[in-house]
Amino acid sequence: MAFNIFQKITQNRQRRMFFAMVLLTFFNIILVGYRFKLNHFHYTISHDFDGLKTARWMTATFCFLIWNLFLAWLPYLAALRFSHISKSGAGWFRLIIVFMVWLAFFPNAPYIVTDFVHLEHRPPVPFWYDLILLFSAAFTGLFLGLFSLFEIQTALKKWISPKMAFLFTLPALLLCGFGVWLGRFQRYNSWDIVSDPLGLARDLFQIFTNRADAFSAIKITLLLAGLMMFGYLVLLAMMGGNSRQTK
Figure 1 (tube, rainbow, N blue to C red):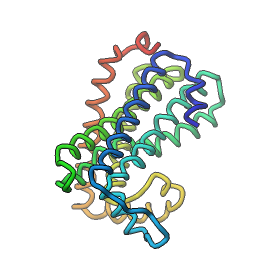
Figure 2 (tube, rainbow, N blue to C red; figure 1 turned 180 degrees about the horizontal axis):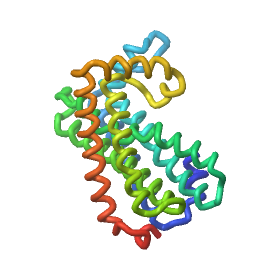
Figure 3 (cartoon, one colour; figure 1 turned 45 degrees about the horizontal axis):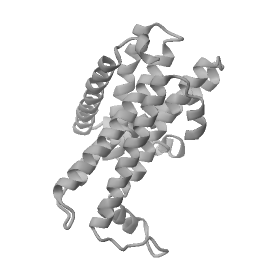
Figure 4 (cartoon, one colour; figure 1 turned 180 degrees about the vertical axis):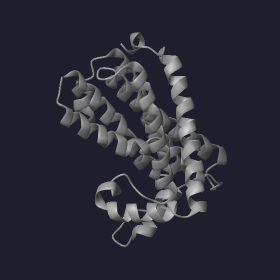
């Protein structure tokens, strides 16, 4: 999928972003691999590993970061696909499908920022190494999300005005922040929207009918959306904030 999308990337700006994210992702994978070596882990996932043991193994080795980075790539790849089909003159149905895929997986990118909850001293791995590793992974996830939003906004300018395309980012970031909250605190995944919509709706109803839970969800959503918004404004400033910088 990634290779097919890359073949269709024609803009130099998109190629630079893509290669930068590939290199940064490989850097994170190397960091995880070296951490595995530092920790002298000799565990293997065998038939007697249940879900809990596997989760503990993933946390202890920080291998969960590789999975989270994979999930963070999905919205970026979906955004590149959206950009391509919007230029090809595809119908609205395909655009809407790809857009919904992007929106569903968008929270997976900044979600890695919340992985700092796993930061603690785990000898023999130095504390500073885990700090750098988590920061690097969070940085990668955050920018995969910001770049994906940039691609969507740029593509939308073909259909709506630049001002409306920018205003679209506000609800998108709010939904993203809410999605991160759902993932971290309620342990929902993006695919639960399809696999368990009734359970998701039931839990959301219970949460938002409880004032304390609803207030907590709103605060965290706004905090995460604010982080993404300021990061996105910095990205737009670096890109020049206009279409002439997107080539």
